[in-house]
Length: 323
Image (tube, rainbow, N blue to C red):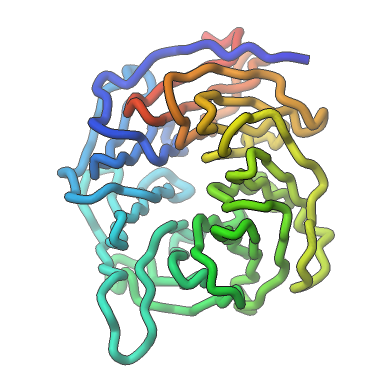
């Protein structure tokens, strides 16, 4: 089986540097971050920028959006974490995670993820732990818990499960850690990859976790069948076909398809049931971000997605058959 995805349109104004992350929101808008230090909200129909923040002196390296599409959580290269109101453009929270605290060990954030409850956010970075912070604007950034991985390897990416019960973190050495938030306990350690894991994505039912790695592979894990806290592959499928690092991934809302963006300058769409790529799209450079449209597809289409990469252009793609 193969699927056709057509180029719908580009963003009206390219970022001045690479797009390093992208999210399609529940309000049918798109948020992009860039190495040029900017974050933008886009109208998905027109491709016009509807909101933006003044450029930060350093790159923005991580972005997440809350369930309702009202707020974007983002983090800069040095560890400035901000909560941005996507309705009025105001910054409602700011935390300088790089500031040393004499009372307790601190860690500059690299990757951040907002809990679906909206009450907290997770951050990971140099020590390979996950730190839970308050996402309440009145106490934004205050530490709530530290979840240790047990290994001092750089935390590359973290992501909450959609049900808000767990958070997964990946390291520069290829390990993946899944923590239970209620008990603050390490549930599982996966050793599915030989190199850094750049991106993680959960299925909408919080049962599957896909990882994208510099070892050119994506790995699908079923988190229901993992022995508690014990290391192992945890893998139920391995997806191969990229010829260079896999930099980004996301699962479709219905859980049937996976997206991946790679340093080989392609985007692939994978059928998880068939364990195979069903579409390959050639891009102009490294693809650092991919994100599915959350609204149900029309006319039997496989859906729509957005991508961003080395050339700084935000691109919209639609499955053949959509209007």
